[in-house]
Length: 339
Image (tube, rainbow, N blue to C red; front, side, top):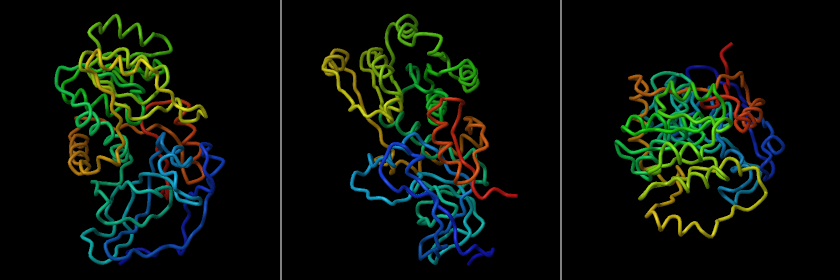
């Protein structure tokens, strides 16, 4: 049962055509407030997360069969305001979830897909897509071990911050690339051993000079020239994890595989592996519980990009802000702000 009177309608963001230009193809739509069925809950979203892959979704790259109009957004944190039968959750409970269509003021979610959190704090939301991508990929794909050297590209970003901290938690020596001195100081504050401001230093030269034996594990999300630098810097038996290639998401040029890639991997017994979080959902309960526990014990930090993004209208601005590299931490948008 509902504890509060709910409005009869709510607003959500809808994609009207396939395009990489997020702002141009989304609009706000007002729809009827639904009632949760058995095994479902209705969540009043307070914060939604912004991800680089939001534009891949609006472009139809994750599911080429998708036909507009469709909902968008991957993750949200909010309060349960109504429940269906056969659920063990309660009205008023703070939860977060990863479900398509999160860019909405309210969302019906299967009770099996919501994750309770201690309170309605924005710092929990980065643990979802960003924290889980970092921790699961480094463990399950990168197979990191204490004493190894780990390189994190875009280390001050939403997921990079967790890759740095997870690798340090395991006992690795961590290098992180970033784009400003402010981000260098941020990386130092979360334990990064060797931050590199690539606008002032050559990543290629630093790695060659300071790490002549190469890098054991690389967490790579940038693509382009940075990917090539990473590939050439792998140690013997090194592992390069591709979690994205943000510099190429807006490009119309097809991705190219250079002909010397097999040789470079073979001569170092190195490996190149992709990671897509949806394929590792079986690990989600274990890792989200670990991340929340570490956060509550202050053994890791979760930084939200300092911004004033409030309301569905600001989501396109937030998406564009992510690509401008203007700050550190996870970008979130606040909805249903308390007056």
